[in-house]
Image 1 (cartoon, one colour):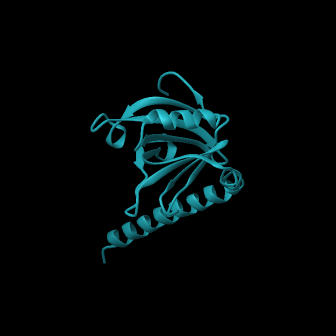
Image 2: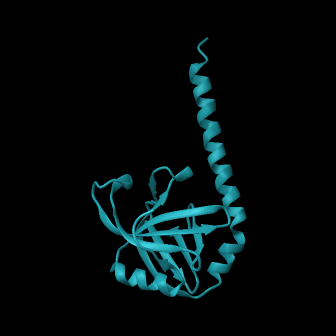
Image 3: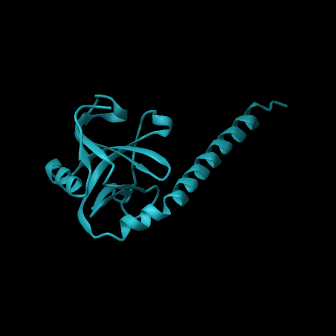
Length: 158
């Protein structure tokens, strides 16, 4: 009997279970930050193309959902990056201690199909969060909202 396909299936299932477990751990660790951000008034909200840095800082992953895409919601002192409808992963960052700069990023972090974006970097309770946000509206409005929330502009790329 060939055990190769069975071993492969077990490995795939193990990777999926580990990914879900890590996501749940991150969610539990960030409950306090999530509550703190969500209890603040919303100062700005926009639909956006949002890419987050992959695990271990490798690659970029687009936040996608077939029911409306992603959104950035800026609160008085915090930022929420989520999928419209509350499905899937949500990121919460304090404005204070986060930084941003304007950049251009394309598909998968390459130069292919580049778009202007705000590169946002900050820490939640689980570690560094990096995102590239291309708002549907004028980028200046999103930039100003993030400034008012306490995000610091920086020069250049990481």
